[in-house]
Length: 102
Image (cartoon, rainbow, N blue to C red):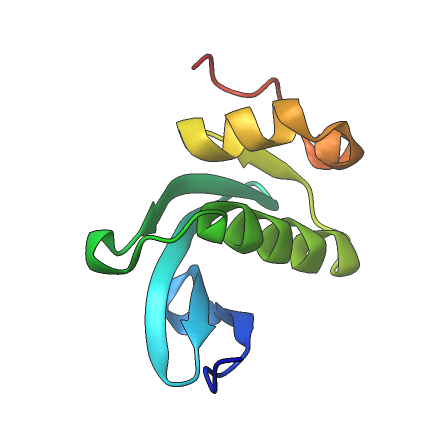
């Protein structure tokens, strides 16, 4: 058993990103910008020094779940997010335009 804090995905609107955190540490982020009321997902990355299996998926799910809860549509320009949505069709309803080819 470990005493590591729980992983959370936090929306940072000022920096236009979702941050994957473990306690105070940021392990990765998904950046975005706005385009005519839609959220364009630009880039997703996990800190190479802290890569653990599945962290990217946790970040993607947290990001997409929050966007769904806020009633927003997405354009997944980030290849990771586009591939994640393609592999997880429960998120396909969020896509406003076809995901980028990977």
